[in-house]
Length: 331
Image 1 (cartoon, rainbow, N blue to C red):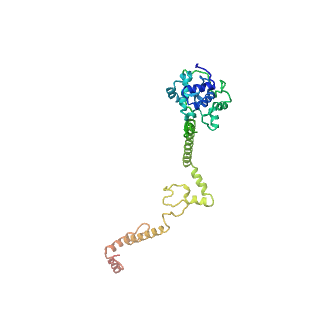
Image 2: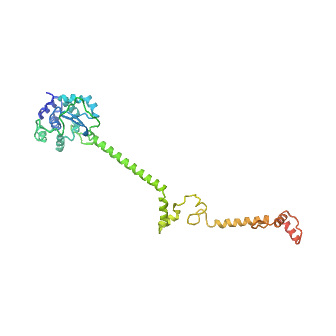
Image 3: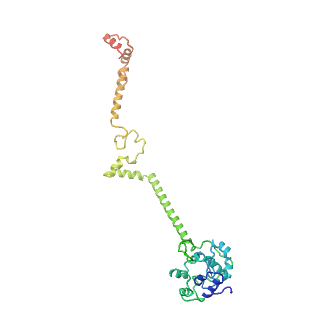
């Protein structure tokens, strides 16, 4: 079989069977090859924007992370493009008896097969009907570019095959289950999670900055001052708390009660009376011990008389008997 041929639908079936492919899958896989490459054995789709460096009849993708593993398994892109038998062997390996059919998910023939209920072993006539009755070389290449050379391998490699399924339901017999999540879906979910996390962090930062700015500026004092002028419960609530204009323990509030002139909650109204009485008692006791106390203290005479009385001395002069009697008492 010459290199660079454009094969018919039946020739692709024969190529599939000649390389040991499951016969029941031959018509469907031939239809997929016709939709992917138009039957061209040298078809090449080098489109990094879509994550493609796809080669041959079944458009085996070598893009980015797939290059090393698939080169090791199936040969280099250049070798695969030059040999249709290698292309058939690679497609048979990827199919894996059926579960790997999702490697071609999105292909026109695959979509027709899935819409028909994924029938097992569809006949060649059925697949040809899905292809529009064209089994020759005029089949659609599904956007695949059949020009260029794979000799140098993929250039500008920088992504992954986004259509590769990473999570799908278990298959039944040789039918594969539906794909739940592709590599593209994983990247999309990761991007959305990063955007949401960034939004939440940004919102928290804005709130924190606004709070700091409100505390640092005069806005808080202005709000409290305006609130104290409000009628009704709102103004009373601000007045009861002192409006936040003076901090706790500041010189304006220590020992002075609240800013409204009301008694301090920690000091009852009777405290002043008790202190007055105690001061009065101390005054009287001092006067009793040291003599009369005036604005400038006791006079010298009164102080001497009081001292003599405390020491029990006789006091000469009028009324000395009475003074002696009093001096003998303990005062």
